[in-house]
Length: 398
Image (cartoon, rainbow, N blue to C red):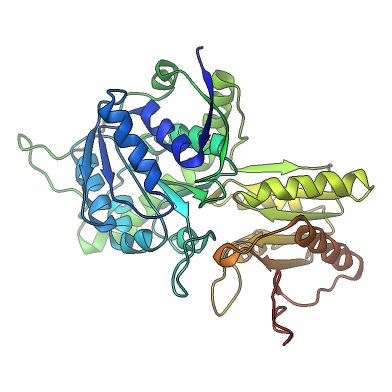
């Protein structure tokens, strides 16, 4: 296998992953911090490195509509967006998943306005978790490239046929540079089967797609649910095959880090995982038994695996860049649901990084200290802590 090492930004890594797959249609509309990804794809096409149709559209809504049209006639499609642009796509996200069109979309996570901001949190994609798309959250530019490739094989599997978002943190990944291994294009092409959908729009054989009589709506939704449930097993198989062929193993939907049966465990997703790894190493070197669980997928949600992993720990924290106003972080809700029946493991939600707020090693060490206290006492200061809350009114812990 021929591969090469390059020093590139996360956006270029995403674009490179797309170039290796070479979808038939690229729908492009710029939005910070995603714009360089589709701009780089346009360079690949202009330089003859990709043979794809590049469509410049007038909005993110139109970008998703163009992808839906392309997939409906049997072409692979790709687009990318962020934040307000993803919100504008909301209606068409349901059309893409409801019509069982395996579109792959990269999303550079960025906070939603107001207040206006261009820096990172993950509220934009987490807010879309119920649109019927598979969602991956990556830790690095390398994982972004590799997950783009894997996403096409996953989405297009006949018993899945579900679109996929590959979510990578804005600026922290999108604009930061790192060394990335680029696999050989022919090898990637051999990893992904030919896309030959059974049901497409064809003027020679007219039909209607995405429609069912109202009396069969439930059955239609059951098929969607089964497709996403089937993805659970397929993700593990695909990451294993990818590791065999390309040497990088992302171990399915969940990754554990640290000692077996740690005293306390922190659950994360996205780029903050790298910082948490450093803290885990530091604390374990000091004789503290701390663990880390990285969620790679929010949809499908790996509740069975989480329940099994977390059942023996003394306390669980969920560190996320999201808040579902009026309740708690959406990821925390899902982790707590998975913990039902696991001997009531104490848990607490740590909300951090909103609007691009730095999450420091000191912040994470403090989180672990709170988890140790919870494990010892069985109690916590509250259900939610906004990490780094700056006001002195005592409202940072709820």
